[in-house]
Length: 269
Image (cartoon, rainbow, N blue to C red; front, top):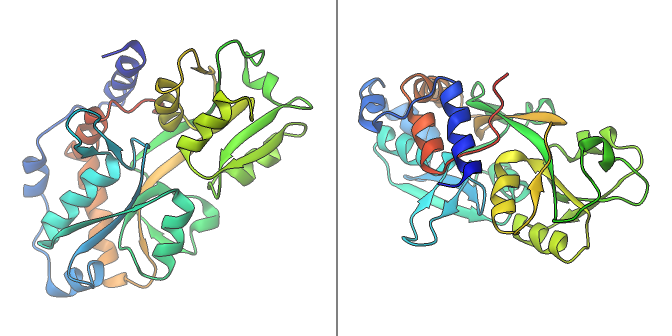
């Protein structure tokens, strides 16, 4: 495990989240009623929306091909509790997941719970907080977050990201440049099409691993509140989802999933 991944696991330990067996968590949940099952998985399977290259959504092990991530692990656990098949639906970026959820094409995801989206989806309480930060390539003159907000600095952001509006208000001089996916964001930074990339640090550290010499700047400009989201109008099952999310935290499923992807960038306060 490299130093940055070790720091990520250490951050999880600071939160008091030690990995535990999924079976222990499963035993704590109550029996699912047919009404709850129908509300949460109306198609007969639990359709979970994920996007690639994000440890809190979905990453693919380069050796085994196994898919991991907070959304993957929790989706499988909830499907197991509902006694329905787990169906993973992959998207290019979070904005596409939100659109699919609005029209009922997916049943669950893990995303940033913002006030702006409170009226669009039903959210659990936060599972964890992830710092928002900046990634710069090797040799960049941008050394601190303060250096980002200067005339001529181009800041790459993921198209449709939930915090892009907040970042635009934060930066008075720099210019935001949208990238269709995180992978394209890496290419834009490598090819000097942007000077900095901004998103949550869990994603930034993964991007940094793929771009030798790059680094995630110290400090943060905000935090994301990761939570379980389901479509509005499924009130019969919402209480169960909230209880599921709380149990996932207290019984260690979140910590277990985070450790499996060596999640980094966890905010401790």
